[in-house]
Image 1 (cartoon, rainbow, N blue to C red):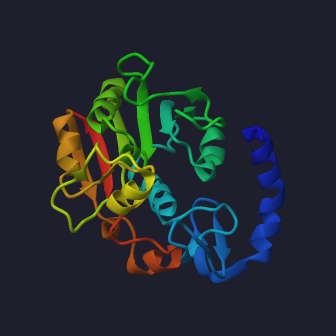
Image 2 (cartoon, one colour):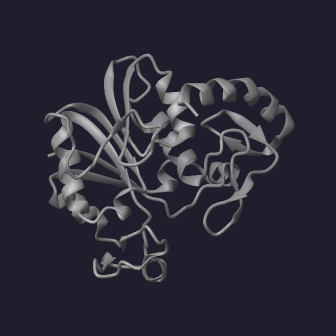
Length: 244
C-alpha cells in the first residue's frame, strides 16, 4: 500500500483507536495517546510494550522524547533529514513537518523514498543536517564502512542518532562472519538476520570513524514515573554523534 494512503487511513482511524483504548496507565508521546494498556509485541512476545494506536515500541517512545527534549529537530530552522529503515510511526509525523526536508531510505523496504546501501551512500559529502538510523547496523556486514559513510554525508554542524541493540554486560562486540546459517545466527546473535551482538565498545567504533559521541542514559531523559508510564527500557542508551 502506498505510504500516503496508509497515512490517510491512519488519520481517519486514530481518534477511534484513542477512544477505544483510552486510559491513564500508559502514554505514547509519538501519537499523544493516553491508553489503559500497551499490547504484546516483539520477537519474544513481550507484554505491555506496543502502543495500540500508532504501534510504537519502547525504543520509539524513548527516541521521540529525546528528539523533543534534547535536539533542535522540531524548531523552526530548515533542515535536511535522512531516516534509514523508516519506522511507520515516525514516517507519518516527520513527513508532515514543514521545517524538515525529509528523506527515507532502505535497501529493501519498498515504502522508502530511495533505495540505499548505507555502506555506499549515493549523496555528496555534508548533505544532511540530521541522520537517524535505529537497529540497522547489526544487520550490516561492514558496519564500520556504514558509520564512515554517515560521517561523510553529515554536515559539520549536524547530528546523528545511531542506535543498535546493545549487550551492556559484554565489554566487546561479538561477531563472526563465517556464521551464515540462519539457525546458527539466531543462536549466536539473537536473530537470523543479525551478524553481530554489540558490546560496550560500540561507542568506540563510532569514535574510530570520526564521530564525537555523547552517550545518554534513559534516566537523563525521563523520570522514573515517565519510564513506567511509557514502558521504557532503562538500558537503552542513546548515542548522539556529531562531527569532530
